[in-house]
Image 1 (cartoon, rainbow, N blue to C red):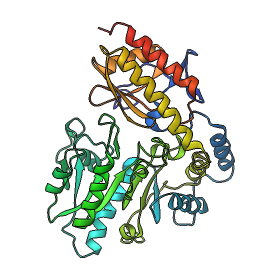
Image 2: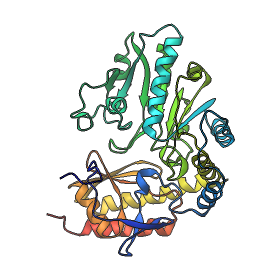
Image 3: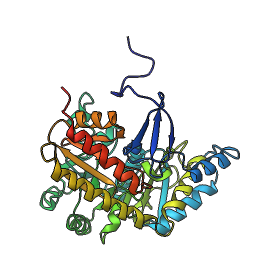
Image 4: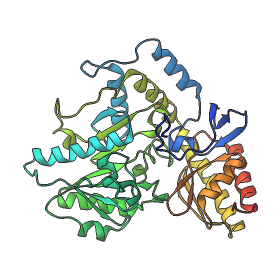
Amino acid sequence: MIPALMPTYARLDIAFERGEGVYLYAEDGRRYLDFAAGIAVNVLGHCHPRLVEALRSQAGTLWHCSNMYRIPAQERLAERLVAATFADTVFFNNSGAEAIECGLKMIRKYHDENGAPERYRVITCAGAFHGRTLATIAAGGQAKHLAGFDPVVDGFDHVAFGNLDEARAAVRPETAAILVEPVQGEGGIHPASMEYMEGLRRMADEFGLLLFLDEIQCGMGRTGRLFAHQWTSIEPDIMAVAKGLAGGFPIGACLATEKAARALGAGSHGSTFGGNPLAMTVAGAVLDVILEDGFLDRVEAIAGVLRQGLEDLVRDHAGVLAGVRGAGLMLGLQCRGDSKDFIARLMRNGLLAVSAEGNVARLLPPLIIEDGHVGEALGIIAKTCAEPADG
């Protein structure tokens, strides 16, 4: 008999009742160091006092207001994101998948308005993850996500991540855009090289394509810049953002240049809940913290400490760990055995991590971690490496 809660998740048998800073507390009172952070969502940890105060203040004023009317908090947040990025304009929604969908619609409308409605196909990368809607699982192209959902939504051509030659060879008269994650997350923590990103920008310009970046997981300070592509010289035409944008409050955003977004006029796209005052207020508080002088520099510095410690563990436990890769505080430990078994043992020892493709244990800690938290995490990983594997 099917349970009341639809069984679409293989949930672990643990429930957390509260969080504080970088720690989660289970119902039995046990404390866990949270290096999963809601899968890169809780960028400022749990119950950050400035986020709590922002939400409490707004909750007593106005929760929801239809997008039929002006929402000043939307205007303020959009202006701040525009000032901090390549973008000229922002559409707010509720999730990363919705932000991707908005960008895909924008791509088609852009070419239609420019007299080329036949240009609708998007080049995407093998190993990508862009969401769970019918269109976004087609964009990701992973068989495990597509199984049972035929016919697959048309319009996506997959090439190897990091291979410019394959990307160029995939361009045809119907090609409209390139969609890529600057750091693949679910696909195994693979950062794109600067040369690859710059090559995609040149390719888009050469063939009249739009460059669409998915910074849902790697954005909002996770790599030590506000957005991962800001380590390079390039700017996209469209960018999807979500996860850490409001530190745990549901929100998504599609940022775009005027050139790309001009075609989306009134009535061409919308959202009932997107951009509600609660989400806007909390996201504004997150930006207040992340954009403070020195915050991203501290993220970059502590990420270097964690990376070095992980590399030392790989050297000292070469029979268990095969390597470490990633960028900033988006790191992956490649396991020689079953990564899910390793992650389960990390949890038993008090550290939460997330699995990814390629036998990788993802470490996505809150951006507020300090040296002591890094030392605690490294100690738990070392202890787990010294234990026998399950089974």
